[in-house]
Amino acid sequence: MLAFDGVFGLALLGLWIYCVFDVITTDESLIRNLPKLLWLAIVLFIPDIGSIAWLVAGRPPKASFRIAGAPSYGPNRETIRRPEDGPRFDDLDGMNDVVREREERSRLRMWEEQLRRREEELRKREEGLE
Image 1 (spheres, rainbow, N blue to C red):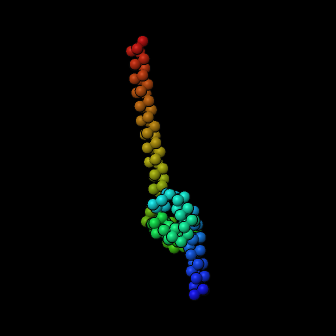
Image 2: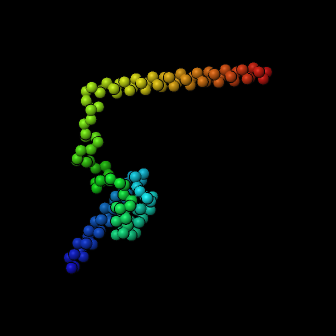
Image 3: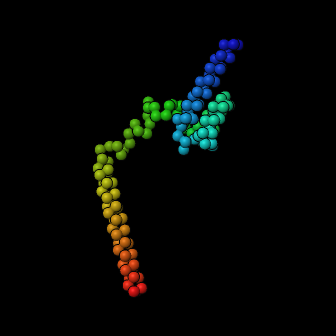
């Protein structure tokens, strides 16, 4: 019975350390229900219940059980090959740059046109006041 208590205590200590580390490393925008600092306080000051509450109600949904920033060894979005990764789609990046430049030029021409109209209106008002 004493050995069981020791193992159970070590398991709770490990869970607590994991949850403290997980709260600290989780991005604040992904945390559910409470602010990050409040979750950290709950996990620190109410270790057993706070750790379980963090895992159930605070941890981001579909969060993996790995250290933030650690490499993933399974297939993920970065390693899955998509059709657009093939050679036929390589020239689209260049096309996007051309389209972006054209849109920017068009936007600048429109702003210059508006500026000219406003300057002309201002000039007409000033002539009318004199």
